[in-house]
Length: 271
Image (cartoon, one colour):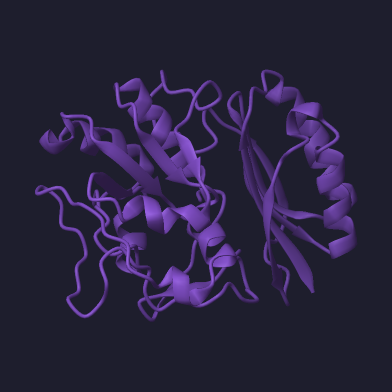
């Protein structure tokens, strides 16, 4: 069995180029496979190996004071999920394409899974799904706005085109593992929004922490007239529907969850 760890952290890593060789040697020495992205804004990726070796590598990574509180999500795979180890240097660990956005300096308020339903139940909170259109189609919180993007890079352009956002309403955002919605909150703050929230750890953390009966409970959300949020009369608005807990994954899937009875398979390092 292989233990798989998906991880990310926005943190100043000005020496990220120097870290590449160190991390690659560390992972290869301990037969770790997968991919890590390094940039001045932090680290992002998914790696796998035997439980003993992977936990050792994660421990060594956390010896860097800047990464001491690095968190990760775990899953298991019966087969080797990646063929080799890659450590790549990037401008961004998740590509938004707006150079002025810096989540190392400020991001919106983190919302724990236990508090998420309460937040999006508020009628004055606009809920936006920052995932792409393909992911949205597999399931979302009822009433969440679908920006209909093909990639995260298109999100800023969509955002600027929404007249309904000119009043700077309260906005709550979510994604698969937390990285995209966290960076998106930094963008909104730069645009002058004051009340910006994001689901801590994304959908994966929500499914992991919330009992199924509460995860499927009602939670109202607003919508933009220019978007086409998913609505189904038979389901309570704001609810993630047809939930299943993350289970053992195979191939290169890090997690596998079921929303609306359709399999949604997120791939790191774009969570």
